[in-house]
Image (cartoon, rainbow, N blue to C red; front, side, top):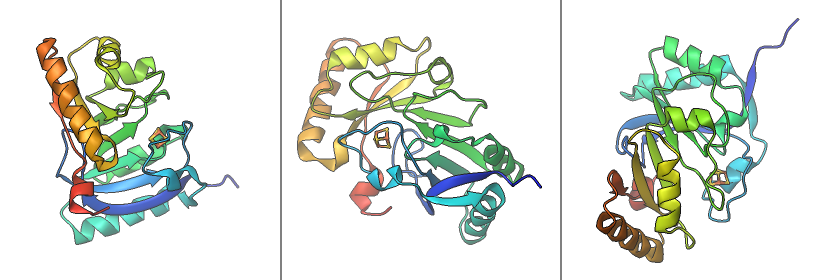
Length: 209
Ligand code: SF4
């Protein structure tokens, strides 16, 4: 008998979206396990591990249970790198249950569906993005690392054909990174770049998940 499709899950929880344009919105986070990158600044290294194998059905039931407790319309598939696993069946199931789906990806994987909101956060040093991610991105998010400069910001922007807002996100709420984000923001404004937004991780400020 064929086995039901499963995904390796790191955690599932309710919170306020912490980053980007959806910041502050009630959201169910489904953090999938595993990542194909090993960023030194990663703040979810625990999600690199194997995670718990769950069927699509089990994941959807958890989301429905959370929805019974909280007024929430959005599910965010995050990681790790959520697109390392075949998430389409889960997306279809959650959509049938009435959820809107955000995907947060590092941009290195192809997509076989269109999310309701796609956040692409390409990573140094290559800032690589697949054609799908470049085409479907609703927003870009760059972690303000020590090596990020205007050159990299320009490179990422130019990889996209249309105008997509780019969020400068300080690295793990470090004060040097906030200062650097502001400096880059000023440089970008002086250089005439549009669509650059200063950002922060709301969940770090509130000290919530
Ligand atoms: S891509 Fe994201 S999850 Fe993966 S190592 Fe880098 S910061 Fe961590």
